[in-house]
Length: 313
Ligand SMILES: Cc1cc2nc3c(=O)[nH]c(=O)nc-3n(C[C@H](O)[C@H](O)[C@H](O)COP(=O)(O)OP(=O)(O)OC[C@H]3O[C@@H](n4cnc5c(N)ncnc54)[C@H](O)[C@@H]3O)c2cc1C
Image 1 (tube, rainbow, N blue to C red):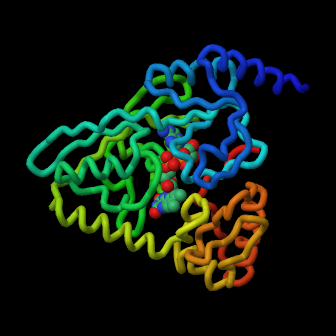
Image 2: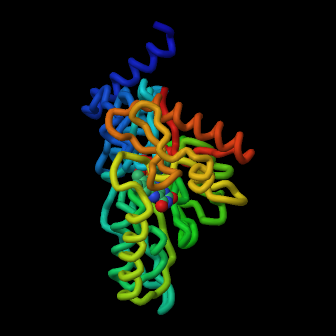
Image 3: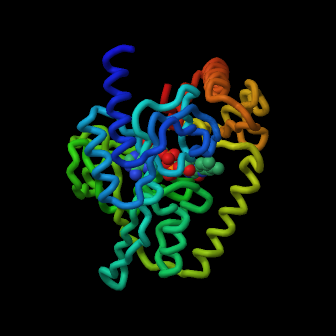
């Protein structure tokens, strides 16, 4: 076995014993696509202290750390993920609210809080700013990393700062102005890769509770009518191109709805959803992705880029 693989398996074993972690955990159990091979190690720590100890030891041992939330935007390849997969979804204490003035309130949320639960918390306190989140699954941390949103807005719009764990193990607060938000993307300029989002702060304004709740339900209904009712997915597979038609429309107009590779299929209901009809492999989904990219390029000369994060081997 090569020296690097040896070091990795030794590091994983130390971590496994220290924290009683699960080894060889199928990622298909932890992703909404329901595909993906095993992670060498899987953990979902429930306290920030434990999380920091785990990450620090993993880094000392040279074990790669892959953070995740609920896995609703993840496609894990069939041979799985080397190192430690760290789910943040149990870092999920109740959000807090600080009234700053009559007009504004600061809401703080841990990264593992479910985005729709945070939106509900804000609405219950008569605060507006999360209407865009109706129907988006996953955690607040995942939403921040993906700059999640809809045509109603994105999470970056009300975000004022993040609390993060840097690669070297320091906890720091980063102001919104230092963050590089783009379409379904966040980059930590000047801080570098390997950042974990621990918590997020949002500045929200008052809104009318009843109309916010009615709009929320209306948007959920609209989404249910336009998105696949069955089949596992990770939501929209491709980013919308900067200009011109949305990815779903291009895929539809290219005649690709219903196109299959094994048990992976371009949804008949929404061209930008690839669905796992049951028992699909990541390999089948990736082959279908390539077929879609090739056909859209051929017919419209547009390069589609995946929104879904593709990880593992
Ligand atoms: C049916 C369906 C509908 C969807 N609709 C929408 C939509 O309308 N709009 C939209 O934007 N998205 C949509 N999505 C995609 C997905 O729900 C969002 O991207 C969501 O915000 C991902 O959250 P998550 O917790 O599942 O993140 P994951 O999928 O677990 O992770 C996403 C990325 O964030 C990173 N990450 C997660 N948590 C952390 C953390 N705490 N620190 C550092 N990195 C982290 C992961 O490494 C990964 O790269 C949809 C998905 C599904 C299945």
